[in-house]
Amino acid sequence: MEKLVILAVDDEEAIRDGIKRVLSGDRFEVETCGSGYKAIERLQENDYGLIISDLKMPGMDGIEVLKAVKALQPDIPVIIITGYASIDTAIEAMKNGAAEYISKPFTPDLLLEKVQIALSQGSKTRDEKRQDKEVDLLHGFHQFIGASKEMQKVYHRIIRVAATNSTVLITGESGTGKELAARAIHENSPRKDKPFVAVDCSSLAETLLESELFGHVKGSFTGAVQAKTGLFQVADGGTLFLDEVSNISLSTQAKLLRALQERKITPIGGTQLIPIDIHLVAATNKNLRTMANEGTFREDLFFRLNIIPIELPPLRERCQDIPILIRHFLKKYTAEIGKQIRGVAPDVMSFLENYTYPGNVRELENMIERAVVLAEGDIISNDDLELWDSTNTPSNPLIERIPMNSEELKEMKRYIRDHAIESLESLFVRNALERSNWNVTRAAEETGILRPNFQSMMKKLGISARGPH
Image (tube, rainbow, N blue to C red; front, side):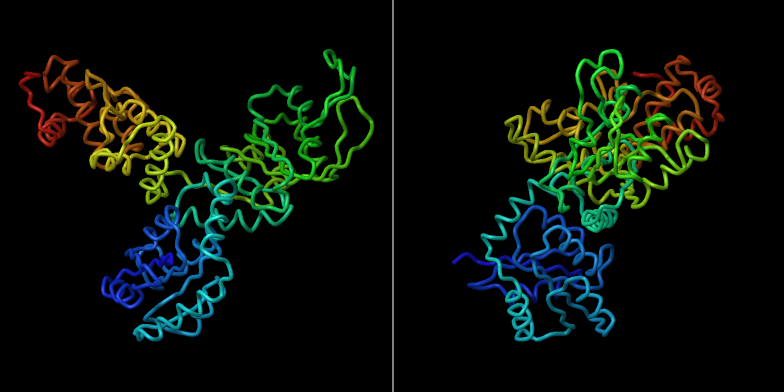
């Protein structure tokens, strides 16, 4: 008989060991971890039949773990344990879907009893749950990777809005996954069996975009040799996703607003009103409120789109997810390319965890794909990432160019962190010295830095004024 795997989450090692000692046996296999973040990371990689989580933990607490589990795999029962027992915490845990609640200290018999009760609440077998998980990998959140508190908020907002027809406005920087969020809304909605139609509003001219959205009748304009069905009709019953909605012209904005208010459209050159039934999801990397104040975006349309806002956090604000994303992209591209790569070198992981990713998740994915293609060994190294070329000059988006003065150095340091800053400063100082033929006084003057301060930087970086010998 296959053992049911239990994950025990507690920041106290003694509690983790105690749970493992009590439950391990013929029926159960127990895995443990010391933080909520690690638990959600494990959950995305493994099958579990039960989660037992402490309530009070640093970083991600037990309620947040519970909410994340219910968002990602709602059929897994969760037991919350705590040394801070109260009616309020018990109610909160149960409201958020906990199967059971147990106070510390607890006896082995009580723990076994609670486990039995929690497991009895789930009627699905382990195989059925695995099948459900495989189906979930084709829908919903399979492309959205992350266990951070910021992403859990996004998951919960998506689940809530997916059940409604309320218009959604997704905002976020380029590369944060706005279309993935829109698809997740669709896949978790009652409309999931109907079309999902995505339109990139920035790639179409004004007249073409209007025709694409609303359709046209034959002969309505030069080149309209036959009638065209608009995407509002194509998406009927499903979801219409308008990406980069800020690029729509004011005249087309007026027609879009009318369509949303009346739930009807009129093709270009036509007179017949056509009813539409769509869930509209829009996205932009710009501030529509500011654009409305400036008169470049209709204020009434902004309010109509912004009924349910979802803001996607940039990757630099959810650094806990970077290792998870790296493993995900490594697995994806090693499978696609057919290489056996075990992981990344520690210094590479440190760099990737501290870099601020102006291009967000898309940039990280591109970096890992390139590294997998170029890697000659089974561990990703700095050379595979192509952080530097043979002349020690930046050769990729991590550092676009060497700063020439103190202001440029200050500006570029905003986009990298920790040890990467030292690399940038080293390039800056060496480049200044080379331009001045290794004359420290002239190098300091040209960069706008006081000579004593420039010398201090050289000393900190271990750079000698004797030249590149």
